[in-house]
Amino acid sequence: MSAGTITLTNGSAIVGGSGTSFATELAAGDFIVSTVGGVPYTLPVKTVDSNTQLTLVSNFTGPTQSGAAWSAVPRVALNMVTAALVAQSAEALRGLNYDKQNWQQVYSAAGNITVKLPDGTTFTGPSWKYLSDNMATKSGGAVPVNQGGTGSTTASGARTNLGLGDLATENSSGIRKQLFKVDPQLGSTVELNVFNPGAGVKNGSGLMFRRPASDGYVIMQYNTSGDYEVSNVIMGIDTASRNVSWDFQLSGNAVANAGSWLSNSDKDIKTNIKVIENPLKKMRMMHGYTWERLDDAPPGQGFIAQELMEVMPTAVFEGGRTELKDGTVVEKTLSVDVTGASAALHHEAILALMEQIEDLKKQVEALQPGS
Image 1 (cartoon, helix red, strand yellow):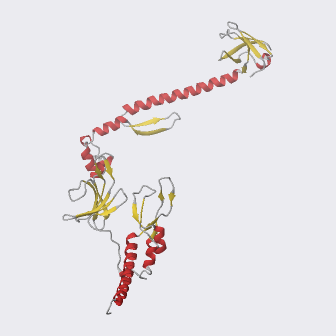
Image 2: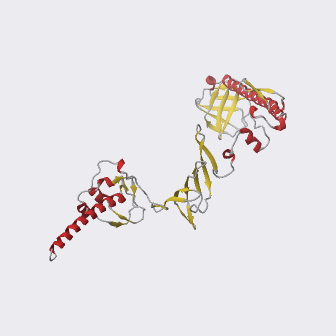
Image 3: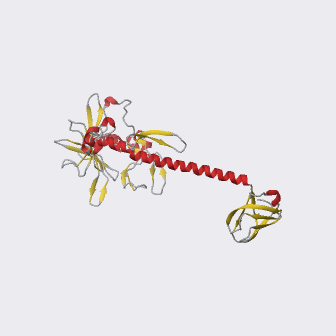
């Protein structure tokens, strides 16, 4: 800002100054800039009468204002601003002219066109008219595959020409059929198929994994009962003559519907085989319990893992984490081999009791008269 303040009077070309140095800062042809009523005014100077008075080229058209701040703008500086504005406007107009010329070529030129950018750079390519005319000359209006088209004017023909199979064109909410190549050298395949099973399989639809030319299936499905969905996962073997399945239930239980759960117990795969010692003593160290669970599992019955560990540690295993209803997390939850532990311990306990019974029978017989 320049020194001092000025007074502008509506309808007058005379500008008064207070504390100003008009004669030092301005010359005829320069400009003063001041904001009056929120509007900036750029006013050309006709004559500098003194340090505190000057005359404008034309009368001031704004409202009268005294004590206004002002700035002196030399004529050279304003001319530079004007020249820069003219250059920028010319550049913008040149760009608009290029745009009009470019678009005219895009729509009307019959072949390749040269597009020119505002900075003077250019690039060449086909016009839209050329592309449209070129499409119309193709056989039946179809662009061959080797030229970037589909070779057909119909959807089915395009899919055939592009080598698309059932999966790539299936109009469904999911995959209904697909063949996976397991070993290309052997030519074998595995089929994944969503199906609706017959009477030989439990109710519901599911996924079927099948090796062609065999009777083996793996079935996974959801059963529904009324409005409540029972999330049973079923694995099964479905043949023409028989169906067996293993049912993993929402309750946490599992059922072998046509057999039993078996574990390998061949002597030839074992070593360090020992008879359980002191079975009766060990039986007294354990109890059979019923319980309710602190997590979401149903009530149950059986052994407590910690008690069984004292008697038969090989029948206890560390499992995963279990979250209780109150948010408590039990890490490495213990699991037990109830079947193996019960069979081994109870059998040896029964044998021990049988020996005791035999001894007692002998003692009773010895006490009989005439013995």
